[in-house]
Length: 506
Ligand code: UN1
Image (cartoon, rainbow, N blue to C red; front, side):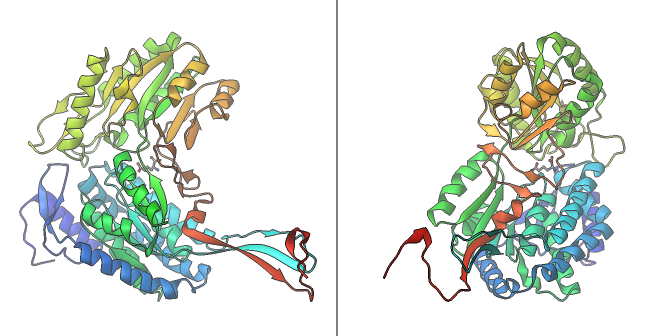
């Protein structure tokens, strides 16, 4: 990388991190690597064309023919090695996440840890891709199911978890015997180049075919190639509801499979018996952490009227102490929004909330001093008289709307009265209330927590949500089944040919 000259200190840091990760210098092109810390474009990066995307699919499809026959515990060696490389390069990859996505180092390194965790999970899983055996109704017959690799998995990921969501998909897909074509967010090409390099190195280190992983940089035009190509057996896409709405019918039209991880509008119910000290800590991390740019970010608080003033007071106190600024500065807890569009969406949402009678209790203002193209905001805490249309929308920014309730049933109704269904929480000291929230007529989300916030899920559980969140499940539990195809096998080891349902055909 010695021939790349740059004067921007962040660009120099990014190049240094890429070098330490062993990533070849990005070829210059139309895509700009950018940092939300200053809003500066660091250097140009080559983007792939739709024709490149097609050849990537071709190479992945070709690699699949061999990869599917490698035993799963042997395939796992690549993922085990990737996990080792991630441990070695935790700080460097975390550093790149900070520069490209604006996360504070603790969260950026946490994201890399999430990758390490899912690699460990996938390695163990490689010996547990269980099928069942069922009793056959016929004598001398065996009935069982076998799980086979699916094919090429297309992964489309978002800027806010530029590396962990890729790892959830890739670690599981690879042990399942699939090959991967990854189209990362065009906002985060550098972390993508780093992950691709590490994965390919892991494959080479253990003598596996590096072609099992393909990277396609660029925008929606390349995503569209993955969406429409019949060789992509599963399309796993993380992003907005409009993106999912565009993608899902097209994949369905060719009878492909979709795994969707779309918007969330996550809420927490706080009951009078809640430990408020604990609730405040959980709420502030979930609502203001990652500058409100997680799909699991807490966006709505549904508080019992009797404690609402006290809780809002305590939250306003905590919000007042949050340090907003350059994520690389020690002590900063809230970094920048990703871009101007995120900032505009936030101010527009706040205007609508105020027009609906909302009162901004804290934050919502831009923090200056980082340059015209950097967008830092104080997280907003807004009391709302009702759950109006803007509260039912996901705004990808740190806005926490506070609503009040009198009866738990009403709280749960309010909670579920949004189009999204990703994550949810209840803060309570009463088991009855907690169980009510987790019951069939409680939270309608894919994730429902008790006495912890809505974000920061562990990889061991299945991750995903209902309604407009898209219904997909990724990472832990039995999410692997989405990455494989099931064959039902009936084996006759007798000398007779009895037909099922007692049918005689003689
Ligand atoms: C996302 O925001 O797309 O539960 C993923 C969490 C993280 C993953 C978030 N483990 O907040």
